[in-house]
Image (cartoon, rainbow, N blue to C red; front, side, top):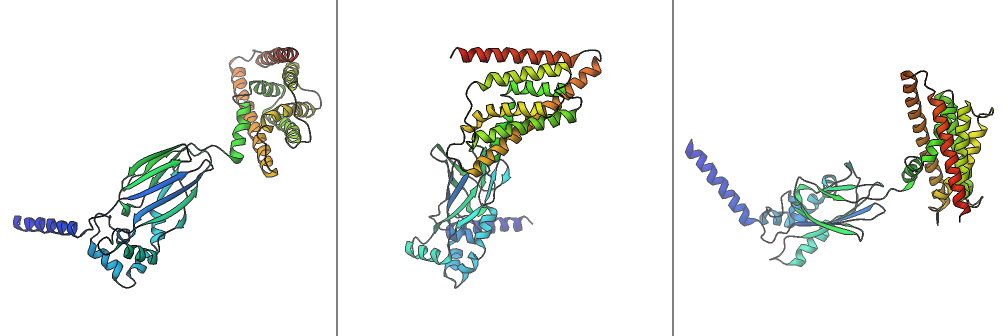
Length: 374
C-alpha cells in the first residue's frame, strides 16, 4: 500500500515537472487599463495571452505542445474562438456600489489576427500572443465604488485604474478576487434635482420648515394639511417655472423679507385657528411668493440648458420640495399627537403658532433692515 502511494506521488511530481518544462518560458501576466470619466462612462482595455486563455489554463501553466496543437491544427483555433468572447464577457464582473453593471464588448481578438500576430513574433517567440479586448459601460450617477473581477483563466491581472485626470491606482488583481476603486461620481439628472429640492427644505430651509409647521397647525386633519402643502407646491411651481423660463425677471433680495412675512402671517392664522375662509387661496398665494425665492436657487444652474433639461429641473426640484413638506407634516402630526395624549390640557398648537409668528416677524424685520443698510 505504501509503495503504491509512493509511486503515485512520484508519478504526480514527474507530471508537474514535465508540465513546467513544456510551458512556454516567456509567459506574461495580463494587464488592464480602466478609465472612468465624470460622466460615468467607463472603458476597460485588457491585454491577455489569447492562446493560453483558449486552452483554459493560466499563461504560466499552458504547455507549448497544447498551444501548438491549438494554433497549428486546422480549424482548431477557429473552433476555440467560437463563443470565447461571450465567455470572456460573462466572467468579467464589474459592479457599481455592489450592483452588477452591464458591459458592452467593443473589441475582441479574432482568429485570423491571432495567427498573424503569432507568425509575426517568429518561431522562437511565438508565445505568448498578447492582444486586446475592449469593453465599455455606463456607471449610475452618484456611484461611489467600482469593483472589477477578471476571468480566472487570465491569472493575476495588473490593473491601472484611472479617474479622468484626477488620479490613478495600480494594483494586482488575483483570480477569484475583485479590486475595489473609489470613484465618487457626481449626481446628475432627475435624481440630483430631487435631492436638491429636498435639501432646499431639509436641512437648509429652516424658515420653510416653520412655514409648513404653521400650515399644519392651521389644518384640522392630516389630509387637509397635505392638501394645503400640495396647493402651496403648485403655487411655487408656477412662479419658479415663469422665472427659469424667462417669462418673469429674476427677483432681487427684496423677496426674502416678504417670505419671512408669509411665515409670520401663517403663524398668526394658525394661532387664530384656521386660514382664510377660502382654504386654497392663502397657500396658493404664499406658494407663488416662495416660488420667486426658489427660482434664485434653481436659475443659476440653467446656463446653456435645453428645454428638456429645464423640465427635468422643474419636475425634480418641485417633487423634492413636496417630499420634504410631506415629511414635515407627518412628523409634526406625530409630535403633536404625542403631546396631546401626554398633556391633553396643554395648548401646544397655540403655543407653537405664537412661536412661529414671533420668529417670522423677527426674521422679516432683520431682513428688511439688512436691505435698508445696503
